[in-house]
Amino acid sequence: RRIAIRLKKDTIQLPVLKDRIVASGYLKGMGQHVVFIVPVKRAKTLSAELQAPDTANIRINQIITPAGKADGPFQKQHTFSLKEEGNYLLVIGENQMAEGAWSGDFKIKIALR
Image 1: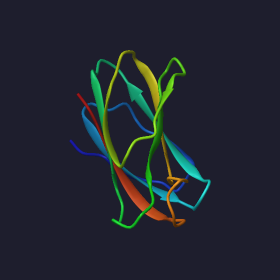
Image 2: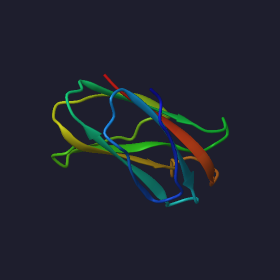
Image 3: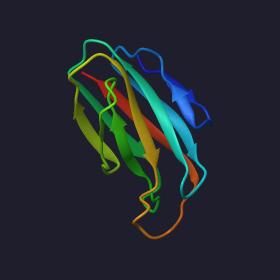
C-alpha cells in the first residue's frame, strides 16, 4: 500500500507507517528547512530518499531521534539504523556550504523495515 501526501508546510506530521510513504514538500530557499515527523514502531531501519532535480541544492540535513540525539548531514539518500520507538525528525534543507540557493518542490520516499 502506498500513501501519497502533498503539503506545503514547514513541519509535516506523517501517519504511522506500515512500510513506506511518499510525501511532497516545498523548500522556500536558503536558510529554510522542512521537518518530516516519522512515527516509528517495531522497525529496525528507516530509509529516506529525496527526489528533486539534479541541480537542486537539497539534502537530508539531520535526523533527530526520539531521545533528542541528532546526526547529519547526509546526502539525498540515506538508511538509518533505529534503536528506539517514537517520533524521528528528518530535517530537509539546503547544503549551505554549496553554491547556489535553491527553492522548489521535492518528494521524499520513506520506508521502514
